[in-house]
Image (cartoon, rainbow, N blue to C red; front, side):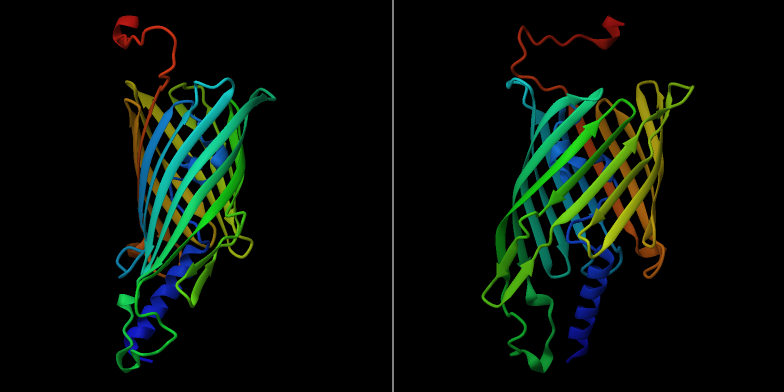
Length: 313
């Protein structure tokens, strides 16, 4: 086996070990629960649009890069609390490309002074393997390695619960519950195991109403590997702008720092994740989040008047 092939396999194994589960981990997990949990669709009660990008293991050739775009909103034309959302994930690592197109639906009801939502997800997983980066040298006819691009797709299902209260919110979800088996060409296949996610976030007001503390926790597992994120987040509101920042600790994995701002319904945040062992601080993950929220009710009765906030005050 040639040196080029050995290096390729080592890199792919390292990426697989560090990424743990099949599903992508984003540092801004508390802002994108409608990706991890279909019941979180419509949780803001507004049209919620966001994009997030993660550049992982910076500095390595073929390092993972993930881009997620999502849109969700309440269905105000229906009686009751209904919401729908859709999103697309493009995740590339080495010679593998994973694309996930999904649609979420959630129905919510009042419960114990809060809001309980039940959600389902239907999606399409597409897997692609490009062998052009494999260097076989004199073993170019080895039948164990494909010589052309291989791809396959499979329908995917998920379900979840999401509860919101004045002082906290929490959710649990199961994705890939049908354990899709994706055939890539005639000789290769990929088994996607069910994936489970638990999330909880608190909202702790202080004596100063301009400052809030929002601790959060997320647990991700396929019951083979586990990842826990514990986040301390604080925010300060000044002149209509909210500034926030904090840190996330993932036991035995990493430490991440983030800083962001909310202004005119737009949220922008940047985070950097440092692995606590193995690759070193210089090869961490860059994570960027951009979101926009606004009231959306095209079926609202009466004229849609837009008044100046300054006049109202």
